[in-house]
Image (cartoon, rainbow, N blue to C red; front, top):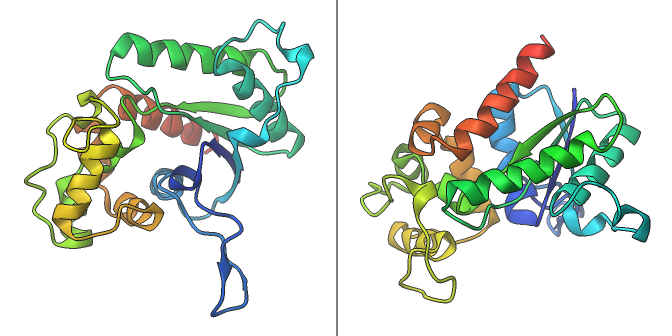
Length: 227
């Protein structure tokens, strides 16, 4: 099974061109998306990545009925269909803890999927607030990864928000950084990948019952349709 994932940067999708000085070769590294996908679909899945910035919006697409994130979702589906992928997972943060804002972005992405023909299954992955919220959804993952008791983790992480420029504020990026500091780990891609590997998705989706539940439901539905 071949999956194409599309996201903003290496925290989400990893680094497909990481150069290992020790091995003298390129070694693809995971972001947090790959472990979540493998937990759900199994390890026998080929996952390739593309950054949203690689999807160029040509003038002829601006008149398309897709709007907002839908245009790039449409282009990502076209890329997945041409590569004969079984599924596309298109990821973008909601950048809001308002459920209506989250739903609007989901709607834009789904409209973009529908604007492109093709048989490739398409899944919207939209963390409410920001993806760091999902990384703080299971205290046991922090205990396993960093021997941290998770005492500073938010109880409903997808609802936190605040000024991104305020180090002491509630924005998920800032909140995650403070938790990393408390746990004694780096705020980096590897930390997110390790946390994702250790995250119990049953616990995490219970603590993020809107956005993570939606994503895992779509992923599980795709798995069921391909059994």
